[in-house]
Length: 198
Image (cartoon, rainbow, N blue to C red):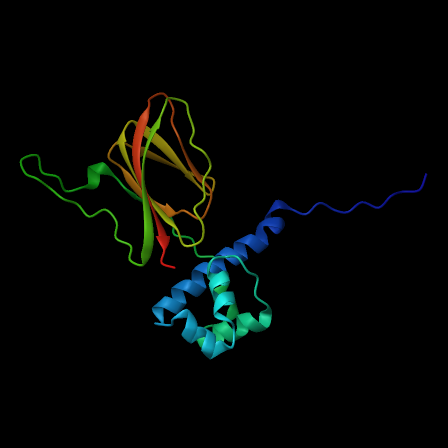
């Protein structure tokens, strides 16, 4: 019986590579355009790339050609490699015990400050013991903030686990997969998701 050639399986990382590059490009293009004070219309005029295509790239809905990528990078004073660089916002944990909260007076602590976001969503979540929230992602440029009101939770971001106690807070890149889980006690959290300005 003749041997039938088989096609080697594509590794999961390679299959995901186009999505990763598209997401990185969308975030970097939007950030550099706004930092440079460019409107989509102005960048379109400078590069010869349509405003619609630029908007699609920033929403991670288009795959530009190398020529388009080079023209956009040149206009923004950078190179294509920088526009494609994946730059994750690492989780930033604030422990309740590190806050300045004297027992005999009212206190206010700034936990996080991140400019440049448009629409925001706020959530209250209640997790029962030994439960796990749905695996979530919120799209290019999104950032999530969470505070544990009661109980204990494990925050898992990009397969890395972070243990949070009541009163702890965290900020992380919400475009990557993340979820919350509990062990022996229930937990209540408040979270805010910030999306980039359109």
